[in-house]
Length: 472
Image (tube, rainbow, N blue to C red; front, top):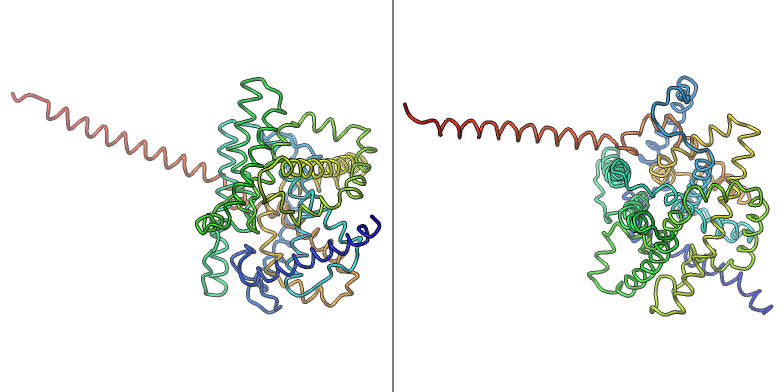
């Protein structure tokens, strides 16, 4: 046992290093969807200068907008539902972790290596990977139970609409800056895959919960278990078919695929279903309970000490989760994976909720600002990866002491998160990230089509009446 314990960190480091080299080579060859424009590591590249100028303008504009345009108060906010700061605070910290990972990864692709320098850092980074996107999916499930027509129409806009506009922007901006058009290799790139997954979950998982829990009055545990079993079967069926050429082509263009080829919708859908099963009221009672302040850190410590192999599996996925035969043993491994990741994720979200409660009491203005940024997390999610990937951070970061890299990445990712989720960014990019104008356009088109149809029907009716008049 002692020898196995000593070999385990070395094995994990080897796995991490091997995966990093694979991702680096796949990114250079274009196998991994890292965006339509390959990363340019030179400071003087046209893309880097243009995007750095855009980021500078957004920073200055956000400062000006924050000072000159005060936020709406409850009296003039209209009919918009009031937001709960706790959930927005969770979104803010999750997005901070996502931007941190992408800035870190894109800089590593550029030649700045700081992996494996600190075992504690490696453990923290792997643990963060286990709750970032799972936490996003869980919160999406908490607020994704509505089947109202307005909710479905809005969902079409900020999933398919935002994804399509992101593709157009990624084609238009580089073509304008460099004069060359980079055609997309994949239907869904690493900026918008979660939006397409959310679209699938909303149309596939939410109706199951709605029918079974609202119509049939069944406990929410039943649709959750059914969803977990179906997604387990689909994950293994799709993986076993992955060697077929036609299936490879389908994976290349299918919006369900994760950037590295895994089916993100079928993996993270478990946590979306978990959010639907828990529900908003029970989640708030759990997160705000005073006993959570004691139990949540213990759960995090327990998961990281005794199930670290599962937490790192969220990043370096084991074969039994995305491959192999459909057997009771593999299904047991799947449930074990889901349980540990869910406990760790919920415990971390509970700690953030307790921190949100403390911050709102000590610094209410800071709490409102952070929660406001968290309410606009989708802006940071859509905009951040292009900046993190195309702005040449690596040459500057490489000049600092390697021991400062983690702190630099944390500060840089916090800066990007605040700027890209500010009210100024919302003012500039509302048409792109929240394209509700698509509904107005569809309504206008439908109204005009119906108006034209009425005119045609009236003319045809008049012509028929004229022909029907008898000769005198």
